[in-house]
Length: 336
Image 1: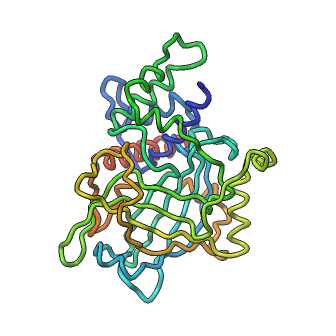
Image 2: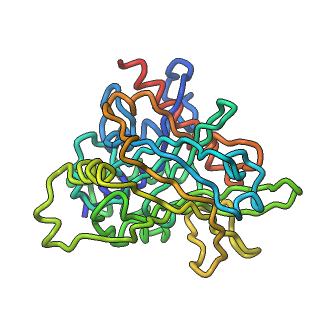
Image 3: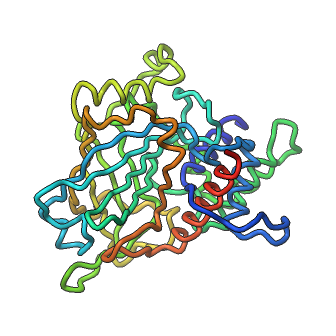
């Protein structure tokens, strides 16, 4: 039970991000919520100098994004308008854990982050997880969830802190106990946005929605017998080999909220019956694999709050996530 909780925390950890430069470390009693979040990750997974606090194991690839015809009807964002040339993107797939050497055979969600490089030199990011829903509604509750995991080792008195937490947080219990099937490839998993965003088109019409990335190759998973034959780095190896053979593609979709849907509570997954709008296609090509992925990703920062006109955060958790990534990046930069 304990090990599975740590693994899931790792995957929930899958939702924190890196970032740029922060002030000097404050005393524990004076730390900001983003600093507390990174500390809580470290409490579960340990400190690994120079690496991300969460999702340190990953692989970086490059490709392009081509907007769909319907994209401009939802948002005036630059990358969602029809252009003569596709928009360059950098993609990072990652293992959902704060451990840099976590085996790819571990049962936890994976991460997919996308950075769009726009013609004017600006950037905008997506950060998604291969699980539809989040364990808690707020950043403060997420900190408490991680603290409970860290305090619930095999020798902790019963009921443990995490058992108590899950007993009062049904969404977290669902998140921890839900099956996490093992993918054939990073390119055969769906990925889901945790938070909601407000999209505004050129006419001023607004839409509240969450992102989804759906693999064009379809969703494919391993049997337990197949999984037993896989190595600890099978996913990063497979995706590199896959893009050498041909492009890996994802459809970028929006799941549109209806009036009764809560846009500020990521612990509630919206029904599959909600309207979807296709925004475009991400294509990872054979000529765009990053050779030195390890060093390339050290320089990368993906933040859900890195937005452009036409897209705004609709969930307060976006700001806390982005700020905690900045704390994480600052600390790993200082360690290098």
